[in-house]
Length: 158
Image (cartoon, rainbow, N blue to C red; front, top):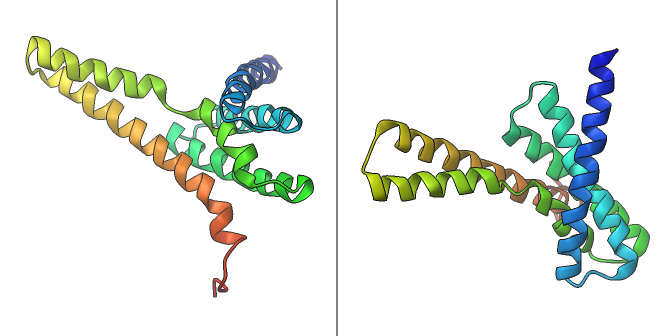
């Protein structure tokens, strides 16, 4: 019982704190006031679903891809309902999943290699963090493009 309670509290915490930057970036992107709630909800759904997938053993890269795809399809659903472009809802909702820590750690390792000289540990840290950041960013980009690949096709898939 404790596992499920900790999971639920962690999920609620994750979703609440993911909604804040989603709304902040939506304001920066001049999203209409009526869509701010949906941007916050999209950020919370995306980050929360990534959190859940990671808690059940999926890597952060794959979790980000699936969460971004989920947010992309939800954004298309909302865009049909509110007659707006899907990017109004989805771009700001993806921002909380941007891998800032991995990119920062990669740059820090690069600067330390420049200052202190090459070591295997610093280079391994640089490569590991850089590749994680790039794969997470690729997951966000592909997940954001997925609805367009499936819903807005001019030719049938088969």
